[in-house]
Length: 205
Image 1 (cartoon, rainbow, N blue to C red):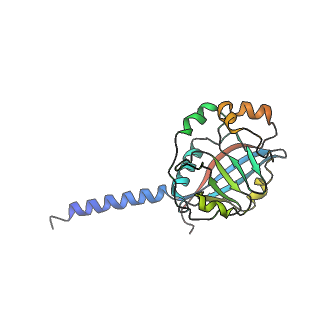
Image 2: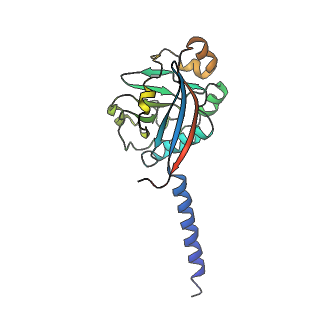
Image 3: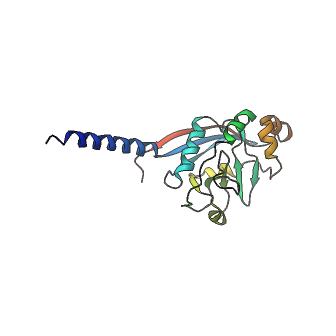
């Protein structure tokens, strides 16, 4: 009987740690408030932690740091996807550029409305840039692009209103000059006003 207290205490500590880890890994929703040529609107992304845990955690970290506030959709290809995730402040972009995250298995295909981290051809190169698939881009699955969430409901109607700037904005200049460059040379770009976690999902399957 004298042996029970220590193992029980260890068991409870383990259970507590597991509960904390589970809570930290729950799905959540993020609301993007955006401004385009028609005015303000919004769409919601539901994040599925199980699809890509590393990507989901980085996305939440960025949202909670207000990283995407006052940023622009700078690459828009209606037959492909819409890309964003470069901060309007060059100093902030520089800070995050070195904070890469590891690659992870692609569990879900890049279907229309699914959101995914952009990356280079190099391993473990994901940082802050994201794209939302406009069409079925399943060909990206084998290249390591792992979706971690999806635009909910009629949200894609809003996403498809994002100003089509093609690939004209220069990403190097965005990183070095931020919104000053974009607002001067591309004043019609759609903007993200805010991105906020609006719901932790605990009870849904």
